[in-house]
Image (cartoon, rainbow, N blue to C red; front, side):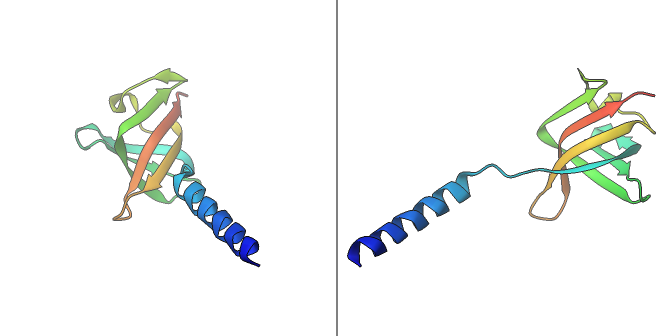
Length: 103
């Protein structure tokens, strides 16, 4: 019995350690760029259901247009886009990666 309880406690400890260190999986949104506010590092995406999503770029966000490195100023209205994002503590949508295609 003594061995079994130590084993269970050890497994629980490992589960907690690995659970806390596992990378978070980012959410993904797709749609078209509606507007860009480069000075605020912000843009709005409209999804297929016509819902607007306002994203803030993270400090180390990656932007690609036609699979090439780009800047927020390269994002244009009506470009098809896929955004990888997470929410911050206040619920803001924080874009970590933006991939756009020109028409």
